[in-house]
Image (cartoon, rainbow, N blue to C red):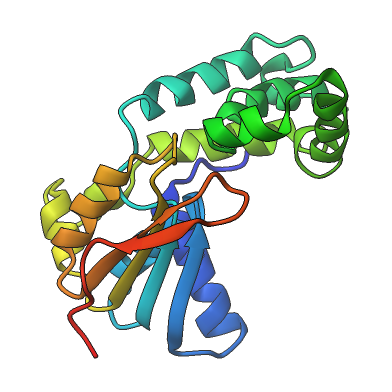
Length: 228
């Protein structure tokens, strides 16, 4: 817990240093990210506007749903009140704390239609739980999740120096082409937020996919791209 606190911009600065100084790559064709990775692609394009030709945020962006703040404080309160947390100064990772933290997000991992269609019996739920536990629910470090959640609270796109807290100014500064890909059924990032965000970026469009996270039944481009 002596490790310094950080925010999204610090994460993107670290990635930029890794790519440019560590790998010696000075320019990228595109930055693609899913969920929070989509948000990071936005921050990278704001912080380093000449670093890439394009960004492709998938189910993510600079805006989040109004309930996001509630979920964030709830997740960390779950960790803080969990047996074994010990204010983060543990020797053995309290895995149950991490599992409880992520479980708050589980309902949003899929659409409602997907849950109804695929997790329709106790046996189906058990199979899903075992598989999900093996690569997501039961393998996280609690301290890492705690720091990650705190990073969301400590500044994001609108707090980028030079934009006076204005999302419109920050997104309007993006030089990269932007393609937002999202789902009508997304319960975490409302489709309207994505559409509104795309309008603030000079060269952006959004593609909404009508899918229950199983087999896409069709796509609807809301805004035609302003480039060939």
